[in-house]
Amino acid sequence: MGKILVGTASWTDKSLLDSGWYPPEARTPETRLAYYASRFPLVEVDATYYHPPARRTAELWCARTPAGFTFNVKAFSLLTQHPTRPAALHKDLREALGGDPKRPRYQRDLPPEIVEEVWDRFLSALAPLHEAGKLGALLFQFPPWFPPGEGSRRYLVRCRDRCRPMRICVEFRNAAWMDAEHRAGTLDFLAAHDLPYVCVDMPQGHPSSVPPVLAATSDLAVVRLHGHSEKWTSRIIEERFGYLYDEEELRSWATRIAELSGRAETTHVITNNCCADNSQRNAARLAELLA
View 1: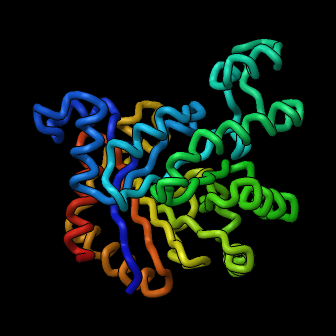
View 2: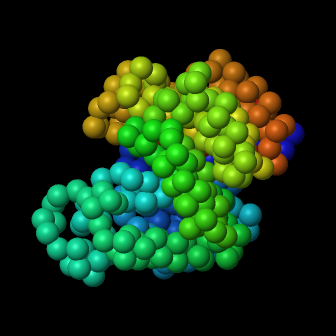
């Protein structure tokens, strides 16, 4: 069995802060991150999908966590071909872009030089984490309109190469990548290009639903658990992720994750049912079961 790290997505969302999970003395960003890092060895940063990170923020993350702590960081929306609000870009890039500041833009809508600058600044800001050995992987979560095909495969390799020496992991939200026709080819392609596949447990039957296929396509395997909320399409975060895995579900996942870890050097497990302290409770119990 390889090494297994269990953590949660985010440590600062409002419902978690309101849940009472943090002790009364953990009232600042510094003390909260320090407390979180005393409980878990891994965390996923999702805020970077909405806004590019600042280098100073990454430096503070390094300073506030112990040696060996790991951050997985979600890639900025523009880099994964999602629509992005110009307001999320750096001020000078936003001004250079011009046009309607409220109209979301896709990567294809922007001049190549601005796209390259977004890449440069995103990766440069995370350099302190990489240099400190605390950056696990950059999570590239692709949208439902990113289907299997030659163009998509080329872009996956470009993302891998653009991020080096940082590494990426790949999550799909188009079920065709994992259907009977494409699954073997998808996994073979990822393995051939040393791209870790991200297995996601999520509600099924939606346009973004991908079956939870556990696969090791690199020395790193990643599992993300979103839960099975009946309100998955809700815009209210607490409803969308308002799910608590029960003991039977956690035991089942622990068995499957343990088996997966036998095929990878390191396995990252992220609970992303971020409503109140659901994610922290499930991650803690899952870590116990895996131990």
